[in-house]
Amino acid sequence: MKHLLFCIISLLSFQACVREDVPSSGSFALKEGDPLPAFSISNQNGTISVNDLKGKTVLIIFFSTSCRDCQQAFPDINALYKEYEDNPSVRVLLIARDETEEQVSAYFREHSYDMEFFTDPERKVYSLFADSTIPRVFLADQTGRIILTQTEKVDAGEIRAKVY
Figure 1 (spheres, rainbow, N blue to C red):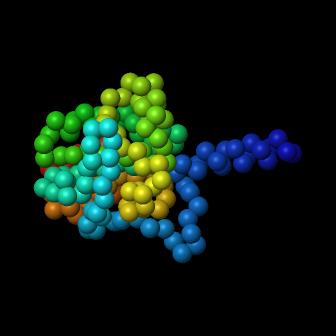
Figure 2 (cartoon, rainbow, N blue to C red):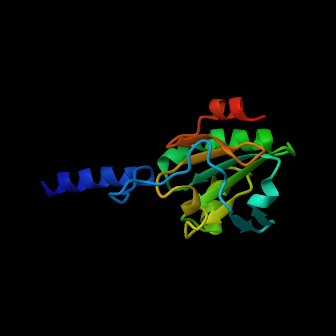
């Protein structure tokens, strides 16, 4: 019986990357029509702020390399990143929630992903967008208004249809 209980608890913990406990008052997430919040985030290439994104279509994807849903989405994330990487009117920001640069770099090396990313180990930026659940996608138009959100998935076709 103890073994069965352990197995059930273990299986439920795998859902933790997607379905987290949220306060009883509900959960917070920006929605379509909301403006991008004021934020800045840095990596070894410099700092990006919301002001740097004005006039661009912005795709922000929050992820964790330990999340199974995120791992399954990485091929689509990589394809989107490569598709828009050299497009000056589109900016793709990949933000690792709760992870360090070393953790993400190791995972990307292991899976041959060559994408620029940012880390948010303390959820300072993530908390401006949502309070739970990854992967989480926000697509904003050139005015800084969110035009698409995705939760627990990365639907590349839907994203491509909205990028202009």
